[in-house]
Image (tube, rainbow, N blue to C red; front, side, top):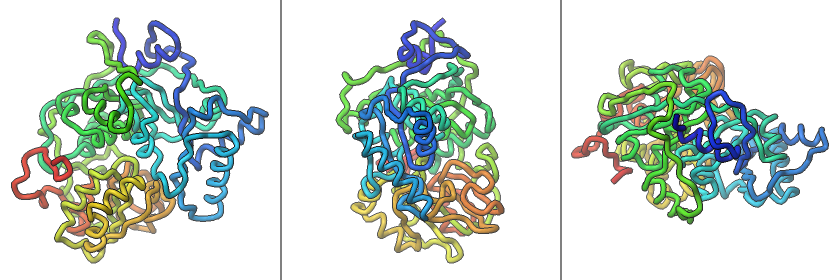
Length: 434
């Protein structure tokens, strides 16, 4: 029996010829990603046990991103802890505020994490990096502490769900719509402790930004991670960041690999989708209910990249945000912010009546920069719509693509972004892909 690509990566790291789902292995990790919210708890565990050291300061990446610039004294202390620890331990890859942004998006563009490697972090959306063909997953603070100290993690080898997508996405339909549709089908725990492996001609045609959106939301279906095999698109992306093919190992699932489930999707049948409160699997067609919105939010590690902002700009160009709507746009990183500025997108957003905030996780997890008040209705390009996720527990969060968020901001209610399709645009094409 062959192995899936995830099983091959784990077997290689554990020094085993073969692994099987359910098997417990001790797995060395190539990289540990740290941010200021979950890492201090792991560091306290180590300090209390006299284990205050790191396995390799060259293999730890520290990026404060959740509450930066600090929103209050507590957040400032967490930031100080991460920074002082990074300096004390000689952590080479520390990204200062003003030079980074959301950790997952900074990391995907850093050229550090490569195909065939393993990555852990005390953040559930670490699965984002799986689009690079690596095994990347979030862990709890205890496992994070162990990874920092030893560079190893215990894993139960996960089963793999294969998601095969055929055809071409239609106009106004994005990777976010695709992943919301898949999560709607399989349920919020439909991939519990499994790997979601994406394949098919639709995936092959996607750029890396779209692929990161797919793997980023694996955790929203309960998955251990998401993963996509390396192809020329991946190689070109890495090459542009100074990473040559000789520096990494590519893995693919064997033809006779065992998958716990195969999900077949016809891309041309996917439509703009919105996840209604209070769970990402509660998917409905965009515009099926004209629900009035108070806030429209674009950002996060799921959809705050330059292509997302270009798509928002396409819809906002020549239009105004509805008078009763506040629109908040958060570029994922300083690099994205700078690119958006150079293309005139930030000015366009402001002219349309939106506000642009600094790169951070922001209101995605109810920290700052757009926290919701009692009864607020928000349509958001983020990844979770749990009760209280973005602020007050009585607020209502609807998850959607950046295009749907922008269209809804203009209309003043949740609407189908295809209302604002560019004349002459061909099926599956966006301004960002031209």
